[in-house]
Amino acid sequence: MKFFTYLFLLLGFTLSAQDDLLDLIDEGPQTEYAYATFKGTRIINLQSNELPAKGVMQFMIMHRFGAINDEFLYNFFGLDVAQIRLSLDYSFTDWLNVGIGRSSFSKTYDGFAKIRLLRQSKGAKNMPFGLVWYSTINYTTLKWDDNLPHNESDRLSYTHELIMVRKFSKNFSLELVPSLVHFNLVEDQKTPNDIFVLGIGGRYKITNRVALTAEYGLQLTDNFYYDTDGNKTNYENALSIGVDIETGGHVFQIHATNSRGLADPQWMARTPGSWGNGDIFLGFNISRVFTVKKPKLPEE
Image (cartoon, rainbow, N blue to C red; front, side):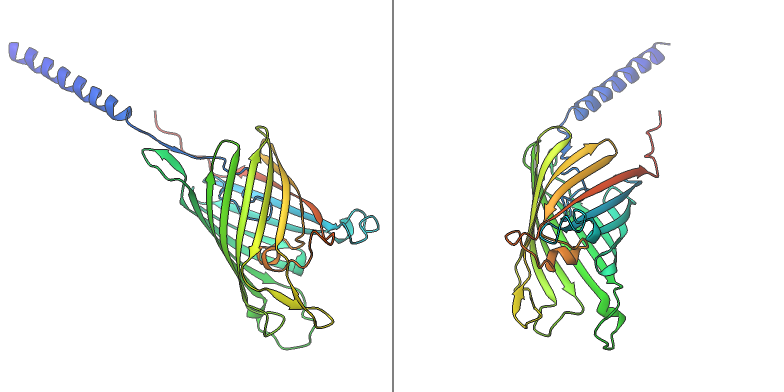
């Protein structure tokens, strides 16, 4: 009997020691990840680092009215010449999001993928910034008006973006987005097919539900076209400012920009108008998310 008594006492002491060791492990440094760096998956035009959670589907409407200097009242506050883009995307994992979209400008269809590579974090794992890769393929269906033979590949264009982001505080976030835009077909032999763009975007939070946003697409390539008189004319850099309003499952974004196009190659590399000339377009983005696949809860 004494043997069994000593055995039970020894087992009890061993289990207690193991629990104490586990408690010490649990009290070790934890990894704290940055979240809500931006409220939406786009700042305005420019992609942010955000992805919907795993199993979540997002539907987005991007709407842009006509330019203020284009007979704004006659065109019913720009509504008669408005542009719109509809998109639907889904996150298969917490790091992979894919989707499709359709823009009325040039009747463009697009498919895209967004991959989270790194997350900003501190604690046990210290990562000072986040990193996301984003790529699109775009297909225009506008009828040709030059009566020349064309290949279907002439309708294709592509964008690739490396999104580098940091949340400096609970109120301020900033990202740099080196990007490449490629057009299979351009207007002239001298016009570049490849345009390098440095996207810069930021957000400043005013309240828990309202934030100011701004973005700029700096073209690093001499990107130009020839006007009807044969004069070389450079495409403008896209500058946009806006306000984010979060309302539960919706994120409502109101903005002003000099870019009319909504698909990525269009606003990045095909913006002819400038703020100085009054080529300013008012618009809004609105997104709604739906949980398609609920996350599994830990077993009790």
